[in-house]
Image (tube, rainbow, N blue to C red; front, side, top):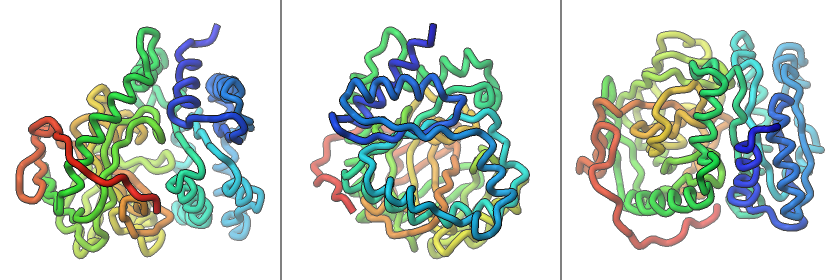
Length: 381
């Protein structure tokens, strides 16, 4: 008998996150290790009247591609994929790996080149998502490899994942995420009026300009689980130093203890305890990769530990995360890059955030409950 939480998660993704309707074409993408969730998503999509098709990825082919492709093959993008990006109504991406360190020995320059070549395809799909022409959600299917990264048994990790999604037997997940959406929406509305944030913590004193940029609540419609508020800062107004004590993971490869110095909005100096070569290769991916594309507050206090999985780690209650690279046009962001690399700053023990000079956050929590602030809806880019 399968785990009933898998079917409950599939129901949540299809009917809350994607809101599939009769006739919608939905792509379900994931590796073979995620077969139980792929199966339940396929079934739920049919029940919703949609037309599902699957893209099952054989683990290891991506590693072969980076290692053995010619330069032309490495940057090739299929016209079939371009067609699908323009015509699919919804996509659910399942992140699930048998080996989370498969890219540890990959040439970072070739990894960057492949990502960069696919940037226009990714940008075009998310333009459609932002314009409400398509929908997307990404989720995690628990595997032994991810459980090992999180330093848990598989059973413990499954409890962690499904608990964070609120699909346990006694829970109403839709009610939970609707309530979360309302609360995060109030907090985001407050920050819409903010001109500048100052983040202070261990080896960190960073000023980020956010005037005129909209904040958005992340409430389970694009990630599951979710629980953050985020914006795209002004590209030229990031100044100061920041330290990321948690490893920054990108394509399964970790860079330890990153320290960045910003001047005029760009990373001027970067160093790490390990993984310097990978860090610098990504910073030099393109013109926009040294600019912040996102700043966010992690507000899911049920996620209370680092797991080496950004889906969960960026939402750890009491942290902030900052992404180098591509920004969100629908929030006013203008930076373009093939990179979007989230790094987590732990402010739970000794951190402060000032909004326009006023202390609003201390030791991982806002100092007061959010208030209702009248605001216009976010315009699609």
